[in-house]
Image (tube, rainbow, N blue to C red):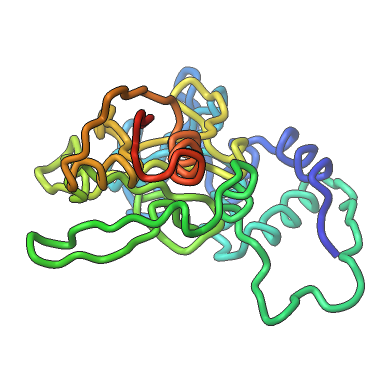
Length: 271
């Protein structure tokens, strides 16, 4: 059985971050925020431990950077459970009867193929196939490899890439090298990516609004180059007309259209 999306939205809408964290920690109020001992690093005291902001639905410890943006994330972390189990936990806490839908009967996998990921569905909705999102890039100055620009995965509460069912969009420059950025705290450079979240209600900006896309803090704005633009650059083809297109998937979709519809003359390009 699978919980219906309407039921999940109902559970998320009634779940309050202060209620859920309050089940695990003793909260004390300070103005519009609440604070408690951080369950990750153990720091406590006003301005030192875990700070909970109910109006934005977020919690964060500024000592160890532990934090998140939804009751579901907190339950998944503290109870070490999956997303569906966290939803069930919240349903039980708020006395909500789960509404489930039956999975189709019979074999769910044909010819040994895996169920499509969120990434696969996103590409398909834009008219793209897996081959359209491949790119030839440089691991270093001498070594090239073919990579997935759009990858299935997610980002954890510490900003690290981990297995999951969101979509990661990797950035490479005109020469096929990773676009790098420096984190605000420290001097370490990391490969730039953007996240396309499957469930926007679990990820909020600083004003508490759901986010469809997000980038690492301090990474700035960068151009996304489709593979055909890199190929034209490598082969010194003349680009007589270049259009700037908003959206990575749209740019890749236009690349696929030009590759098929215009041949290899490249009379005009879009990026």
